[in-house]
Length: 119
Figure 1 (cartoon, rainbow, N blue to C red):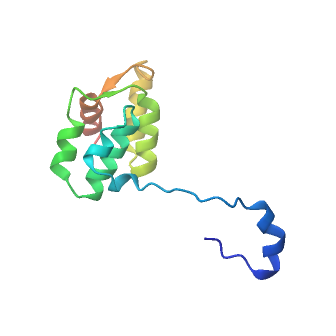
Figure 2: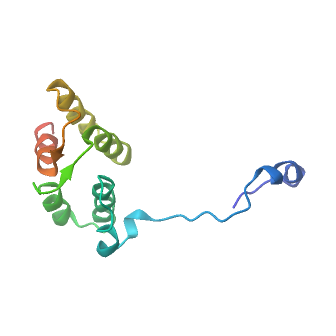
């Protein structure tokens, strides 16, 4: 995978691991596979899949579902901001901090309501 100039190859090859690296394309996983994730990471993987498949209505329903819990809201919001480059996730995190809720479990609906409110 690395395009190393020949003059550097002999010096660098001993430093490069010789084992395969498995890459998982999270957004392409089917729903059955995504259901195996049990943490907040599942919300991220579901989000990526809905966006990849252009399923806007499913994404809206998913984000508005009160049954889905976010255990680590600050980390979740930070990752969502990194994936989407949407500053509204930063504003939601700031709101949670302002009200002292940054370490409390929230549901997706609260996150969605906050997201819509700061639009």
